Amino acid sequence: MIEMFEGEPLDLNFFIVPGVAEPWDDPEYGPEVRFRIKGEMLRMRFENWKRERVSDPYNRVDRARRRINDLRNK
Image 1: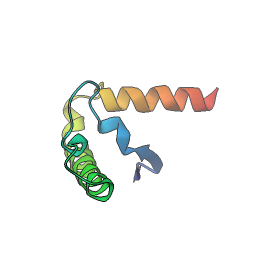
Image 2 (image 1 turned 60 degrees about the vertical axis):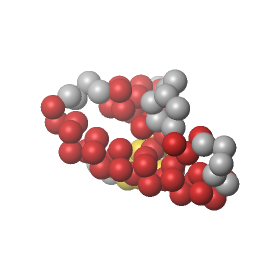
Image 3 (image 1 turned 90 degrees about the vertical axis):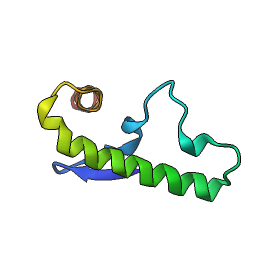
Image 4 (image 1 turned 90 degrees about the horizontal axis):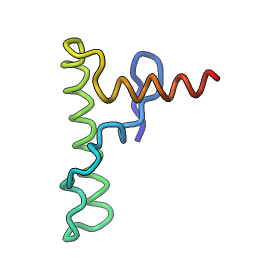
């Protein structure tokens, strides 16, 4: 899942916190429901991140974006 941010594509999977059980991992959901829930939740995290990132420019998502961009530019 990709969103555009500041003219660059941003993979919403950056907003998944490693090691944390996510609601879309619940086995009672089918694949379509899991995909819909994951998309909605990651878009909400993306919107919250855009609002809150001014107070923390070194957050996990920005560090990952910089690392990917550095690798791309080499």
